Image (cartoon, rainbow, N blue to C red; front, side, top):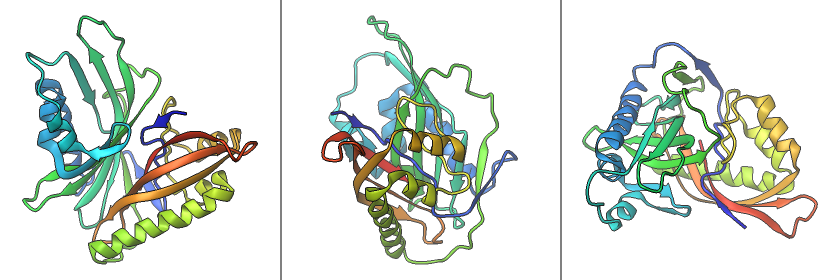
Length: 276
């Protein structure tokens, strides 16, 4: 049995519209922070970039969820210049009405210039950004999937802005966190009996699903085809989450186990998910 890192990402529980126009003003600081994060990764290496841009309580998956800063500090810096280069580019994202919480996703590639001559690795990253007390944005959740090669995808498509149409419902951060986790638990209860139906019910109009080994599914028909292609049952449990005080954007991450419908007593896959 394998553990899959951040296997499922679904933008849901809201009415969303997408735009290929200019990046909205509230989202721009998050996109620019993402681009600066990627530039530092190329120029100084991933260790320096992670320590500069990860929040104190940021989570990434290795494959289990860990504190990203603590895990980075536990690895001593390598002597000499980095042997690998990790680069990525945000291509889609959203931000809360209050501008304090947002996310980006897009392609990445990793090249290895060490003596082993490993082939490049490709994938899609997903990151949640949260405004800090000093006004800066830092990464709260860092997740990603590996995909087939996608050379040339950088700079070739416009940024896709996901514009929230739902009316903000201001609440405390604690209340928003509880609400988004309860949304997730309700979703998981439905997924135990019919995983495909639960996803299709929860999926927003411009929802997307990320699964390791596949290019992101960004159209409802493609997501439906994937879900119906191999009947699965899923059990899961949220671990933690967060929400904006404006009440219109939140995320949750947790663990899941998949079972083939034909043999429901035998797990076929275990992993971790992030949902927005």
